[in-house]
Image (cartoon, rainbow, N blue to C red; front, top):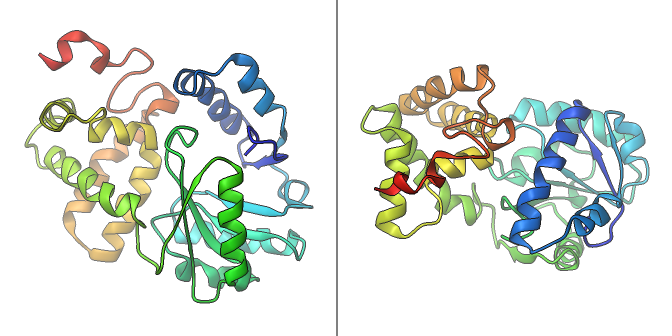
Length: 274
């Protein structure tokens, strides 16, 4: 959004964490978009604040995109804090694909102006914006979000009905779950699973490489939600395997270690695929 000229404000309870994530975008953005450091800085110049002061951040917001942790209780608490601070004009969206709009809309004070706007990772390259509303979302708001998505160089994909995972993650999550089940059940280690998938299917990334990009905190929250919804012990088993990694600070690319080490990842070694 900042790259496309919008004035952006970022809110995070942990300012240093937000700044670290923003800095981590620089290298892949420049590489994948053949961009210069000046291009990156020009976008950053449109980020007018990074703050833990929510009231100041949203005081004149036209659009809020929420991407707090994938926990219904955390989202409920956030919306309770957010909504009284917003001007009447503000559209609220969630970047969640774990939950659908109908599961969150009751926590807001503006059901007609609430929808989900879901992005891929490395959004500048994988430029899809999945848009879905609840039955209470105004049609004009969906139209506004479609126009906004196009204005930030996204391809808008509007769903006709609510669906957990939307299109992108409805296809991706079963793959990631299957890979983690193989790991949790001791069938093979993550590097071996990735290697097999990539060689067999010509995929540029293995499922555990994808998990590192997503971030293992998010993966852990999603798996816990799946366990709460299904009571399938496999999801608890996967969560129990992830928990000590997260406790050790090995949360994926952003921390420098997850299933792989970064930036000099094991899969960059020519011998990885031998």
